[in-house]
Length: 318
Image 1 (spheres, rainbow, N blue to C red):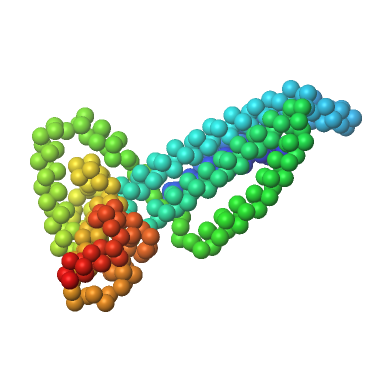
Image 2: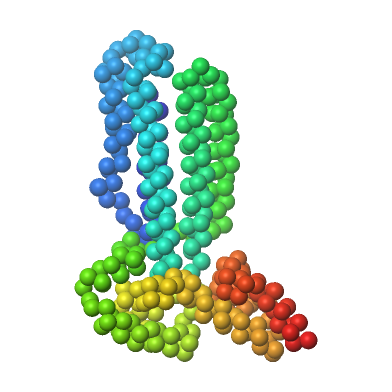
């Protein structure tokens, strides 16, 4: 019975795992012990008629478990817990992804895409498990057994998939600082504290400074450039720089940097003396370290893949 109630620790542990993956400065804190509450509640409910009685009574309880209110209570509690935690994980991933796009330019954005996929698959598995429990307490318990077998088989494939991803992408995880704020929150705070006209004038000056630095120094050639790196070089606080790019320019920092990279790649592709330079060499030269992310960004910016763009240039030349 205690082993069964350990299921209440699975989803909270997964939530903390996702938290640790998303934020590089994650540390376990005493406040996280609150996630033990569903597990404790489930076991406390079993004390009067199971844990504190003799062996014979325990056996009777187990034999008639389908009619026991404590077991039904635990199943309902588990359903509620599953819904709340998966909702919390999806909200966490959405916020973390937005923070990454506003402050970083590397390819670790792929970790959020993968975590979203992984969470979606787990959500389907847990929903299937809930369906299994519904049949378990119905007039068709044999369906529950078949679903159980299906879940056990799918778990093997999920574990293999997870290990494959982890082994082939050891640098996939550990990304952002949890102290970072969303730009929308920063903008709301600034509107309360500073006149709009003064703020607009400062923003225009800082914007010119930023654009000059990007074109003159080409910091975007560094594949792991962050908003903090640029802030250190041009002397604009990270908070203000984040608002400048993400709010005033209407771009995530991730897209802002990629725009310069794509423009630089386009210049290389237009250069007749570099016709023999491969697409792979170009993407590394301009600051990308992934062919898929380069193709995606290039097509978003130009409407064509790099290969298609090069062919169009060659046809126009002919």
